[in-house]
Length: 95
Length: 493
Image: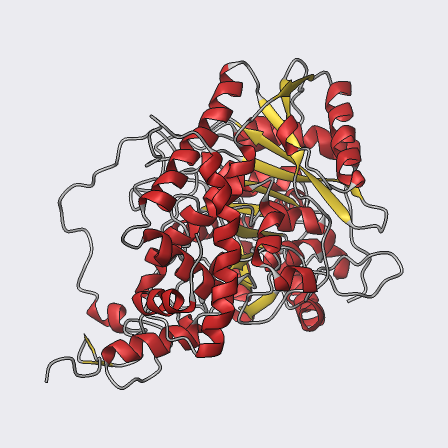
């Protein structure tokens, strides 16, 4: 399988990455090189094989349902590009 | 002063404990070495000199009272992927501009609890995506090694290129690193250093910027095998904050150093012999086999039939996980924000300006293989292939194999801005052909220097072990190290 320029632009939009025409052309060839490379996986007999979900056989650890941390609003927004009274500030989303 | 930076962690530890050396002296020696070398090598992206001196003074106080921890006063470099409280943490990406976390990663917290001193943050490929350290927003790292009679700048490998270069050039006593497809072992092999990726779950991933969560593992890069054992012991732990962290006690890895490999069954997988592989790699492999045989190990030919599918499966699984993990960089909560005409445009402009080419390429591949209609053909198939790759290893281990010996990389270090690698992403990806199987199966793997090629560049061998049997790797790697000797780059920087 391979991707065309329209698909590259659609996928870039899904990934929320703006791409110029020039970048999309470059991405098209890079992505097709990778998709060509992974094509060989089609040779592998996978009937009846379980997909891997956990590389180590382990039971998912569960934490106690208890409050162990918190009251750190200042820390949470400390690295925000824009914040106001411990809120993240974003461009207006509702007209 | 400068010879202080030649001490291994074990040697420095002994001298610090005996009172023959202070951490302040050792730390100053490293800070001077960094200042003199970093312009040429670009291994550090942030040097924390004040913090280092402060930590060293505290260590000296503890050492004077005989209360020092396992790494008391030892100066280390930290890969920029690890969250360090109040200190530059950007995964060497533009999108994390100015980010200084309000938390400390579990691995680094473990190191500071044992008394280690932080020298600064080390360069790396952006979000650990790369095999040459050239995708860093902070520019490439230069390998301290050069070919004989040649001034050409070489890559240190990646993604932990800053870690490997800093250790090889004695700009830290040891370094933290991470490995998703070979990012500890390949740069270790390219710089004549030792690097171990432990079993998945051995080191907590908490506080480390995520690339591909089912593959990422932290580990050390050091100058010799003993130092790797010492550092891994402090880095590893059980962590309730990482659900994939295992509840197993951390063994005293250093105790494995010097133990015999007599009677150990060492597997030699025929699938790691590639067409067009340089003869020097094959020769090195044969040398490793001979050394282990001389030490009393049984050498057994084995087959891992799905080996060749590990790299293509990796290039579906890892980008898929990355596309999800990197969705968090949206210009709202941390790092870079580029304004747009509305919020969606702000996301798109921020991510376009903030991510480099390789990261964008992997996010797009990941988004594509997870998108509607393609999930089964790509992602599900790759996860099934992953099961088969793991099964190959389980089969040989069940047949009695204790460890597997392979080359670490298909070549020695290559030049910065190599045209072949730049023109085709897959060529760069092939660097990880021998290491990526280990991540796909969650196993521990160590790269140990084993010799120099015809041009005088270091080459490494890899040992692969059973889950949580890192001790076998340290024991066997030490035998190789004893036979091969240690390798040091001639100082030109």
